Image 1 (cartoon, rainbow over the protein chains, first blue to last red):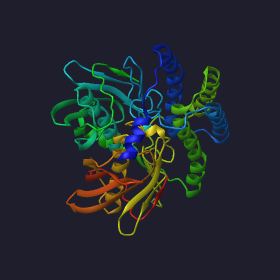
Image 2: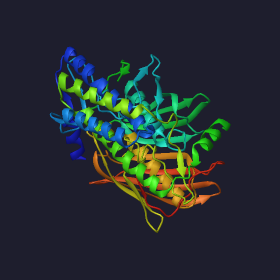
Image 3: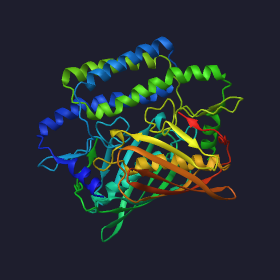
Image 4: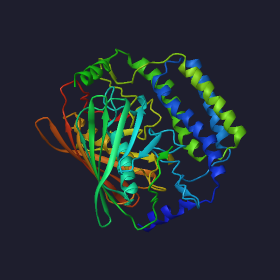
Length: 224
Length: 224
């Protein structure tokens, strides 16, 4: 566990960035990630022929060369400044700089409910035409973890149980979660994902406060 | 449920492609998805300045234009031919054309064990420097579902329970799953993900055979 703790400590950093510099980076790198995000369904759906694919790949290679000239050699981690402006821009579910991330914004209601409306493109497919069961789990793990944090009990996932009530479509979906109760270092959280025809997946999670530093911001809506 | 059944039926298609045509498409579109996959961590890690990002985005826009000239307007679904060569190239965990997909290959052992060695880049981050708990769930849902199918009980995820034993690092990981038993239409499957320091996440799943057609190929290793 020491290795894990060391790794977290190294990547949980007050980098002292000004709000202006954070805004500058968000405006520069957010749209770049959006472009890569748009390429994901295109790579699944394109019918382009040999020549167009070859030319497209030349453009992608040129972009990679430009972006790779100077880059970090580690995960993004959790960064913050003295204002308590936390950034998890590499996060797989809602990182501003992460092209995989399906959630644009997680909302926090005054009653502790955490929710997000989001759109899953064809790159999130599992059963034909439907959301991959594991993608629902991915989104719910994030929402439940956020509900624990917003409720004052930030932690790592201890147990996550998912019940698939009906097939989850792709497209526009809603997810939400809420902290039910705590017992010592454990937070018990529930949530679900719903589509146009009601609840598709229900989740229960136990999140456990670790012995290392975690983000504990409470009263912010998080926008990617 | 009728809508879901209709959607699955529409996208569960014998498209009659020859093996040669399948190989041609794999050779054309697989490397394209690999390029987009390589861009995901770059978008997290690049330190490129305004000019380089602007130029890179122009290249990405040009690639999108080329790839978007002709494309399908629906998810990939499940396609097969008379040889029983199934393709799930849009699958979020191992689709050949899916840049998100973290698994390159799922191996099936004669004893029914299903396993994969895989690498998670920085785009799969959750807690600082570690694999997102939901990403572990995503990979395990796929492996457990595959173990049910390989064991002769293909189905949709009914219940998935994950126990997080220790933080899962990013980087090189191993996952495996096995069908334990069946009861009627239910398949009970277990599995885990391990890293350099042992088992990180354990999973139990119940997969339920649906009333619509599903892939039931048994004896193939699946390569993306």
